[in-house]
Image (tube, rainbow, N blue to C red; front, side, top):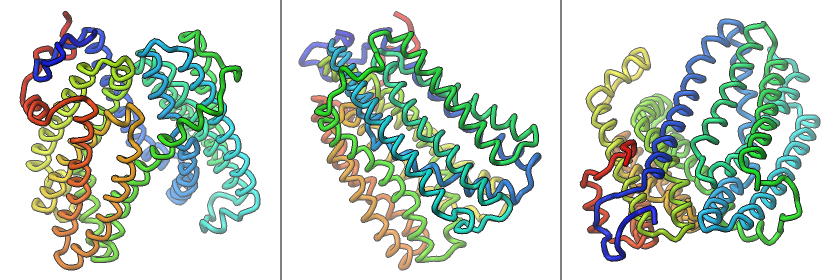
Length: 466
């Protein structure tokens, strides 16, 4: 066993194998690189585009660019659940089952993405998109091609997610994630080069799509070389596997829906209740408060493949240890960042908005409390998500966020922004009351021992060699 613990020693100190600690460290670093890369893209693209393009052209580019993002739902969650299932199968010593899942899901995603591509082409051919969006700088014909090119790039991303699963299931999550981040940066670099060469929006979109296509082909060839037992055929594909994974896959889509309800729905509720000025105050304060969740998400993504692998191998002491460590790290990070934001948040908000948004420390404090509760249950829920046991979790999340929107509106009308912010605690409390007992039951843990582990310093650091 990789975790050295007796069957009745659930409160023993953490003692993880050096390989697991190394994978966790590399996984976190790769996620950090990815986050820095996406932040770099967001920071650089605005001044570069505005330097070479006019403001109206860049504005219309942003509008058109937002449409294909909805195609990211095209794989219906099959990429994520297939990755979990493959990781658990390989950990259990069953590569043949992992190959069956890979080929079955591969063809399903290819067919779904192909169908979405055809429907997209037909829709933009028949529908006057430019007129509907009231665009005047980019020609109507170019708008159609830009949406098609960018849509193809999004669909290729769904294929890449499954290709990454080949690395994840073999304990090389960090490597696969790093490759994907490099592909994203390369595609961005190609796009920036096209803009710097004074190319228009249509050519820029084509370059971006071509770069992503090249990256997908390269990733497929690397998977074939690095994981030779992964084969791109159909002799192992099975429709019964698709039916088996359909429930978890469709349930997985509840998380982006719940996130949209949680973030956008609450803003709409505040807008209807109080007006656009309060929406700006509420939205900017919440954006700053959620900085901690970005780091917590990196912790979740790092521990995710290890939880799948440990559960697939039936190593429940290791599952329990990973779950405790992940929650401990997430809470520690959240509390540190929350403390920093409480102290510097008003100053940061004032400078970020150029003084246009008045800082409100009590409002920010309430929103930061919401973040702490969210950090605990979202990290704990990674355990059941990694094991494809998230159907009820997804339903609870959608119901909780839906009820919260209604309460947010009522609280905003009667109390104001403070009431709207406090109402967000409802869904977080509901999720904690459901998630924690469920995760402890799955990991065969008890609440007193789990709670005590949150305040116990680990005996071994992730980067310390043995």
